[in-house]
Image 1 (cartoon, one colour):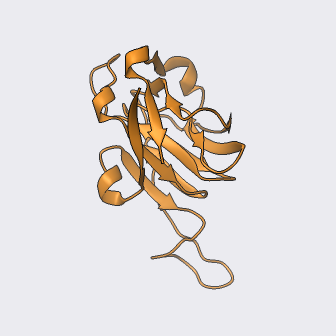
Image 2 (tube, helix red, strand yellow):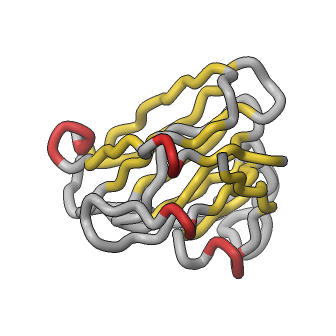
Length: 164
C-alpha cells in the first residue's frame, strides 16, 4: 500500500484546497476592547443559500488508511475539530468521479483550527490523532449532503496509508 506523509498546516501548502484559522487563539484586527473583543471574518465559507447547518461528525480511532473521498460542487465546507487534533486528507478539485490519487495530501489540523475547503476539493471524515474519538463541527448549507455530495470508494490499489 502506498503511503502519504502528514504535513503541518501552512497558508502556502494549503492554499490549493482552502483556508484555515486558529479559532482558539484569535489575533489581529478586531473590534472592541477588553472585556469584549470581536475578531471578524477569520475565515469564510461560501454558501449559495441563506440557511447554513451546523453539524457534528464524530469519528472513532480507526486504521490510518484513506479509502473514501467526497466533494461538494456548489459550496465550501468548514471543519473545526473540537476536542482533539485531526488528520484530514484532501485532493485537488477536478473532473467529476475522478480522484487524483497521486495528488492526495494529509494535513494535521490542531484542535480549534477551522479549515474551510473550496468547492470540489476531495476530502472525507477526519482521523483521530491523539484521542480515541473526535468531534468535529461541520458547517455546510442545510441538507447539502442530501443533494450535492459525490462519494467514491478507492479501489484497493489506490488506498493510502497515512504516516505521521
